[in-house]
Amino acid sequence: MAAPTDADKQIRYLAAALKAPRIVETAARLADQARDAGWTFEDYLAAVLDREVSARNASGAQLRIRAAGLPAVKTLEEFDFDTQPGVRPQIAALASCGFLHEARNVVLLGPPGTGKTHLATGLGVAAARHGHRVLFATATDRVTRLTDAHRNARLPAELTRLRRYPLIIIDEVGYLPFEQDAANLFFQLVSSRYERASLILTSNLPFSSWGAVFGDQAVAAAMIDRIVHHADVLTLKGASYRLRSAGIDSLPSIRTTAEPPPA
Ligand code: ADP
Ligand code: MG
Image (cartoon, rainbow, N blue to C red; front, side, top):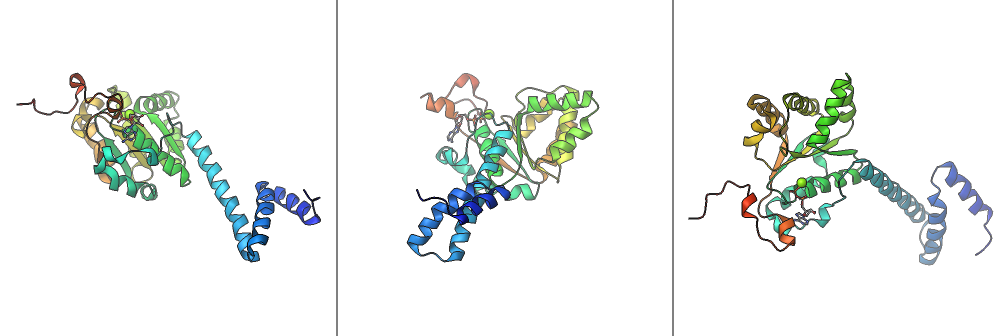
């Protein structure tokens, strides 16, 4: 390799001053390519800057994905829409994350194993890639944290902190019923984000059963009203993907759909 020229040394110094040390390697590599292909100076500069911006966005996305607390990183690209053709157009529209700018919500409903957590996570990854901060928790975990904050007289501060996340994902609403205090805290979270920041909620129960989860029909109705006012509600159907991949069609004893018995 040739000894570094004065220009190389200067690039090294200036890249460090810009806190963009990657530029040293990109500039050298692209300079060879530019000479071979006869690029203009402008083409070369644009290519170097483009590599730097892409690398920064990718590492920012990785940080946001790690900070989100996802149970597993699942992407929308990994989802097999042939099993859920009904939601394909809606997910395709949501994937560009425009809903976050409008503080709209997404609700994923459906029986166990139909891909609710996968799609919620995939939308979270898409949001992180689009530059948004994301936070994931199960309903039980989120309510436990809100309860802690409330006990320490920090609830308003906690709700303000959570509002700095354009997207909060709450998985498994209705998996466990809430005590009355917990239900009220959940309601406050929904109210504090209403028309200000987005929520993605998943539940294996239809809205009509949420009264039982929250222990109070009026609280549940007021909450559902705020959630769905600006929301996409996606209903997943069919057998569990987990059972399908295990070669089992269905487990009749845990069927959650209210289908009439076969004639
Ligand atoms: P739910 O939250 O509805 O119970 P999950 O999203 O956890 O279901 O899905 C169960 C498992 O099956 C996960 O590992 C998920 O990645 C996988 N899965 C479900 N549906 C699909 C699908 N359509 N394509 C690919 N993987 C899927
Ligand atoms: Mg799930």
